[in-house]
Image 1 (cartoon, rainbow, N blue to C red):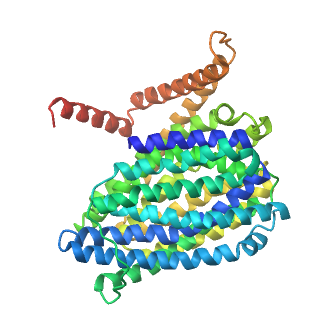
Image 2 (spheres, rainbow, N blue to C red; image 1 turned 120 degrees about the vertical axis):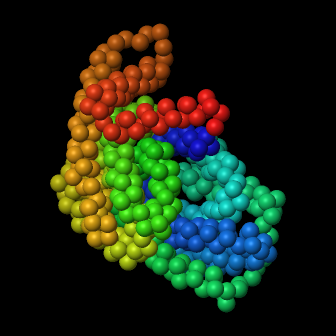
Image 3 (cartoon, helix red, strand yellow; image 1 turned 180 degrees about the vertical axis):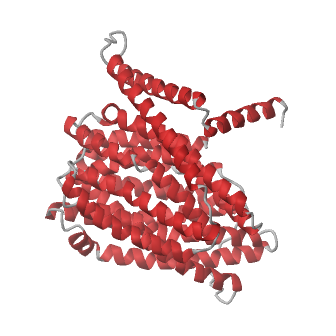
Length: 511
């Protein structure tokens, strides 16, 4: 967790530096377009590998270490061979991909995006290699160094920006990522040998575990293709919008990802095996309770964050990014997009939780159908909102939130068929009360910001004064929300208080 927080702080520093040099220009749009292609490819190979490899290697490493290494090597060799074929194809046809997929770009932007994509193809290979190393180390219960190693990308990109931003332009991002991922792989690879893994270039296809893995891999990869299409669709459609639209979406998305990763990632990761255990024990009532509490607790956490992010979007974007090439107009566009992106926080969390439960039921077909529906909805709603909302990039952000809400509803329909009563009325009542309290907290934050902004802070530098005003205003909003939660006796607040008290008493007892 400490390494993750440090990594996010470093990544935010990198984004501030990027904004200073490039702002929201067509060059940044080209970079994000190229990234959308490789971000679509990587999960097709990396995510299924982690899901399939982990239980197999964990099982066999305690029974027969040699066989465990052989099975791991077979899976790794197969993934890398398939990935290499895909990357070579993208490398060769990068011009065609950009010409036809991102036809909204002008010719110079398409040429730049194509050049960036070629470099990013090589980066993707080392990124997947680093993911494989991380998976092996994690199965061996080593987590710290893999977490620390993710900082290499931010550090190398920052170094490239300092040294070559004025001469190499947007290519510094691609070269910085390539250098960082190479360093990450070279850092992790020797640790595998230290912890006992021995790789070999084998292909044992007649093993029962490998045959089952190939079947699962085909299904999971197909789902990753469908799921990843949403991000590409957004960037392709945004390419037809005014210059800087893709960049504004990229900056806003990075800010939204911070609370999502911190508060949602751990819950979603932990809840999957929890759901699986309850299904194995046929504990349907316990599962309903777990689902209801997870959704309500997500609302309790993300509703005030959404209110604060919407209220303080402009000053936060200005504080973090407005310098150098990132001017006032860039702040105005990005902060508006951020307001609509903030609506995605709770829907994305809820969708992830319910999707994990459907996965725990091993209902892959329902996941595939709902994912396909979400892609169709994304295209349709993007078009509608781009035409009706100003700026159009904000329409794409709003479309993402609406699609998540509809997809979450579809998952609830699937789950209701399996579990009958999902405590839906109780969940809706709780979310309504939480939303009202969050709205009041947002209003209090706005009033506090308006008052504190009028005060002259002559004794401190402007950046510290702005930081203080934002932090103090947010603190007022959080305090108002906390008071409302206690006064109206939110069950979620009581659970948080009880958990904190329990943790403190266990520490005092030395447990």
